Image (cartoon, rainbow, N blue to C red; front, side, top):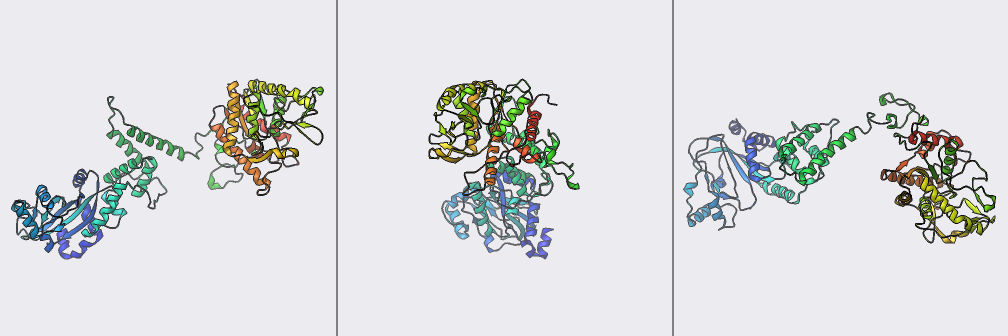
Length: 625
């Protein structure tokens, strides 16, 4: 068929489409195996030519002086049977002797025959036996010299193969069309060798993914294998193997087929006997495949309601969803923003709290509702010479476990534990207000009428704080501010400074990591002395009164930054500690309660505090009704 077509339209055999068809028919499965075995790699086709008769150059001895491996296939399509020889092929040993005596490459003609005579090489012994139409000759032109026959006219297909990191069909897709002339050999070979030597496995082509899990291109297959195996060399190895077996993706046409083929490949290539040892490489690759399956399953079910503890928590509540959304109408004002319960509290569990004014309100409600709120220090002795903000002598409910006052920033929690357990005491220092009251900068909600009252209370307060932290099994802290004021010795004020101490302090905005480190230090210090200690972290919804960044930020912007940093810090802490939990009071107040604020738009109402405590019960209290 090819021979007849060659007689009618010889120019057609230079067209890329017909060349591709010739290659597909010629490169059989058996030939493919021989080529891979010879090159010990994949291979590429860099030229494909059809000749009806020899030109003058074909009648001269030819060989390639290059050291690069290559193979040439001559497939005879037509013969006039006028002679039995189809040319001469000199064996590799004698060709090497000739190559050693000359630097010439290509056509040698009479010079080659002279060299053979000088080396006692009998060229008559090199004549190729009679080859039938449909048969072929496969040889390495860098190892064996060849000369065509002048005694017969033939039509033959000549294909040049070289080693490649790519399968030949992938080369055909990725590079320019295969040339019908040998002049393309140098450029293409250079590119392929560079890719082999430099192991360039970059995915730089446009990759298209259809709306289904189908695999429709080799580039898509490459991307998927790189996603499965971080080891680029191994991903590339599997890619070359797959496109050699299934270059048209007839079998590897979807993700499931790819994963199953990978499993079969591992199963067939690894020695699973009891006496064998799985290599580290095999174990790592197997683990990567298993992790990919798990990751893929997790990804595809990420937004699914199936298996979720609270399916309504996946999508933002919408009171008027579209019909195509297929979701029930929900209002965010009817939501409690949590998905899992952690029943670590009952009415007998020793509980404590510290933090912003929001923490004080929570402490009162816990006492009102009969929880075992630990109180180690009040201010019920008029002769003590001190006052505590938001607490009057004789009040039924304390505002904290001890009189440490409001703690707005995370360094104050670290200092609370360090002072109580004497691991890093702070200096004793007092500042006097305009009204004559003396203040401790580390507990500014506590005021003293005179210096002696402060001295009398100092150690008693530290002892009370220590007892409270040692007794509490669950302790709630509210993180209030990301801005703080730092004294010259590195310690931090619990609140904003009094006007007379600006000379001793500097304003500071804490990073996420600094907030994490402060709370971690507080937790670790207490945990050392109280192994049963559990920490519940919440972010106070109470916004800034003022920001220290007024020259560049609005207070609302600064507040958003502060709460965001604290929220991220809380998340990281809970993720990395077994006995830490998060109470989403900030989210409840700012998103799920219609009217949470008092008239100042900063402090929450009593009803809002009760709703926060109710959220606490839903999450943390055993058998809550």
